[in-house]
Length: 115
Image 1 (cartoon, rainbow, N blue to C red):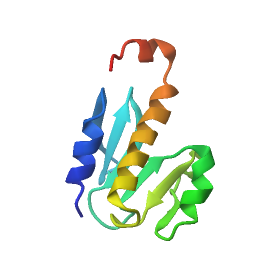
Image 2: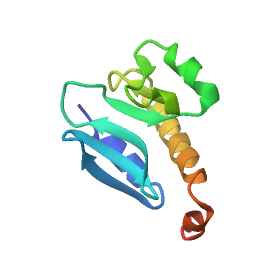
Image 3: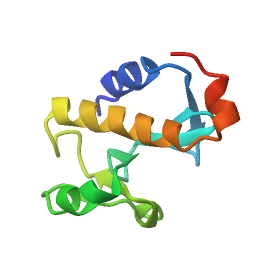
Image 4: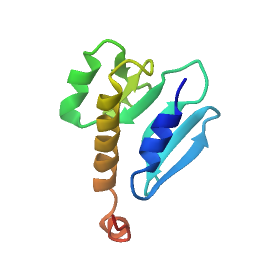
């Protein structure tokens, strides 16, 4: 699986950190809160990410996109494969996920971040 482009894209956002967690998942976080994760090895979905509530239904109607296990109640979707959606769309969704999670951080945490 080609996760390097995902890493490069996510780490390009201000104040993003990455952490391997749960054995085989690479998490991308802002202010300690995750906004996306990729599977480092099978089995599992290629990627899961936070989406806007109004986009959740639209995205999960798309073949290859499903409610993310354990996280669907928080409006997370899972891409079954790297090619479930066009790469440009995935990059846009990653940017939106980052913005959603960042906007929900405590104001004092947001104030400490510039950029």
